[in-house]
Amino acid sequence: MIEKLSENVMDKVSIDFLRDQVLKNAYGNDDTPIAKLDPRVLLLWYLFFGLVPWFVSDVVVLLGMFLFTAATTRLARVAPLVLFVFALGVFSQTGYMFIVSLFFGGNLSTLIPLLVLTLKVATISLASITVFSGLDPDKLSNGLLWFGCPERLSFSIGFAYRILPILMEELQNILLSYRLRGRAPAHDTLGGKVRWLIYQVKTIVQSFYPLMLNTAKRSRTTVEALELKGYRYAATNMKVLKIKLSSLHAGRREALFAVVSVLWIALCFAAPRILEVLS
Image (cartoon, rainbow, N blue to C red; front, side, top):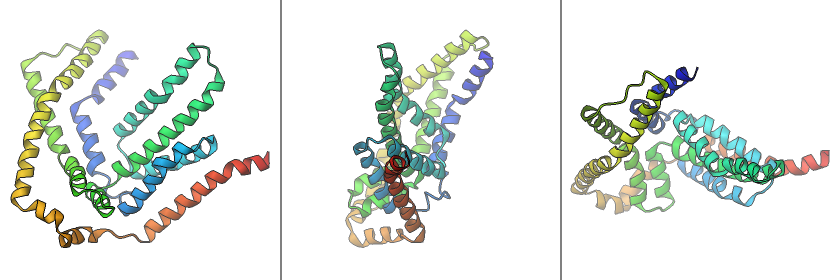
């Protein structure tokens, strides 16, 4: 049983799997309901769900907001790897506190404050995943430009998504060079599988520095090519900016999304009073 589980983990923990997950999340969600929305509406939506939960302490309201952001994340069809990192991050920030509190004299009464904190972090995190993982990079950068963000910031976001395939390819080449010069431990036994996983993690850590150097070289070449083509002039020209932002359009789809969001939030804030009246 343990050996079979470890083999499944070894099949998943590979650079090919990570590359497929990253690229799917960056380029494979163009046809989702979230990706079709206007980025300006989504950024305003994220501004609400990124700030308001910090000022709310009612469990029912936070639970309703969490369920809504979970539904939007599902509609965005986020890659499983991103959801795994989200779950791991939420537990590492709040979940372990409850376990530690039980060892130091805590009881179930400590669950409510930790649940409130967990719902806050989870709601804001899911809202971030919905917007920044569910939107096309170009649409996201255009939405930031429309709100007056610096052009270099919006360009950096689009460029970061475009360089992801190059980054993953470079990482794979570095890992292959390490494997050619080294020898991976045999993983026939359970102890060998553990040593193999440690070896893989160690190799990835050692690959980080040359990866950053090689990526910086490619980024410099790209930026120099853009400068030769007059990129900086185009970035400050209002006519070019107007043409670039002409693709943004808010219609019935965005109105329906806004109405559903407002109605759901109103229901969440009214739910505690309704429950109090019913009780």
